[in-house]
Image (cartoon, rainbow, N blue to C red; front, side):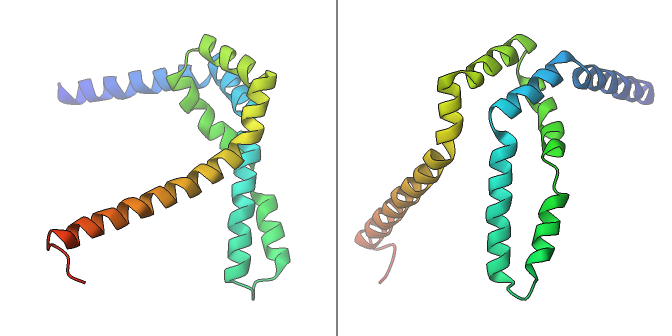
Length: 147
């Protein structure tokens, strides 16, 4: 009986996944990801990673990194992520999000978000450093931490 229930659960799950991944929501999720600049942002991240690799491995010829970057498919990323968006948003919500991201304000958000994220990360690091120093000071003050 347990085996039958397990098989039934697997079949239902597979059918549900197949319906989700073939629905119009997937197409809308892909359109949304493009409008959000997901591929562009991912490409920038990969370029930063490759720059770091180049600095850490100067013996590797630049042509290797150029060829490596050409092998990376942003469409593959979109195909992987679209079902996740379709899982959490209804088709109608995806259409509304597309409209927002295609609007002037949505485009401004997309354009400015990398700089905002970078500056926010730096601010967060500074904030975290201050908290760490405060904790260390209080630990010393209470005698839990020695100099």
